[in-house]
Amino acid sequence: AQSVTQPDIHITVSEGASLELRCNYSYGATPYLFWYVQSPGQGLQLLLKYFSGDTLVQGIKGFEAEFKRSQSSFNLRKPSVHWSDAAEYFCAVGELSFSGGYNKLIFGAGTRLAVHP
Amino acid sequence: DVKVTQSSRYLVKRTGEKVFLECVQDMDHENMFWYRQDPGLGLRLIYFSYDVKMKEKGDIPEGYSVSREKKERFSLILESASTNQTSMYLCASSSRPGSYEQYFGPGTRLTVT
Image 1 (cartoon, rainbow over the protein chains, first blue to last red):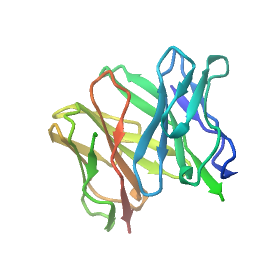
Image 2 (cartoon, each protein chain N blue to C red):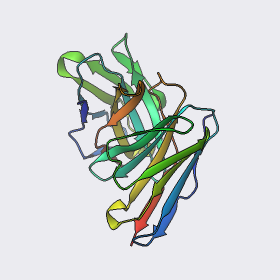
Image 3 (cartoon, each protein chain N blue to C red):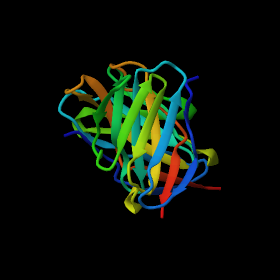
């Protein structure tokens, strides 16, 4: 079965510092990969996605992620963090539901980001 | 913009009560999903629906049922609420069977006492 691992439960960075959130997946074929962000009290918002092609993908809010097949990773990065980036971040992999032919997402446990002024 | 709304942001119910969580999307999406979110566990899929009156079990369907009588509305039902169902419940929708991209509602925080 597909799975997603986010090794870091909590990360704290200073405002203006760079950020990298780690994500490793387990999937047999070429994965469809996603990063979502959940601000306090809100639902999840899609930051970026990877389906194929260029392994470096750009997303909203200045985030980017790099797909590395050899490492089964899809790490999220931002060069300079803002206080408003404090949130919980979820990595997800798409899974085809063979019984119904419909697609699902398998989520990691999330990484909570705190930003110090 | 896609809008997914959930009927309540916070709910407090007693053990044994029947609980209905409602979700409505306004973009004519075929697929709708119910997740529960618990600290350290991320989001786990309870049920999803790919058409009106069609449903499929997710990873943790025990203790839950769903109803989809209209395309825009997907309800999660706790037949007899228990304290271990205290959680955040998130509804999502996606536009077509081949689409993985899901749009989420704000969530309902349910407390069962």
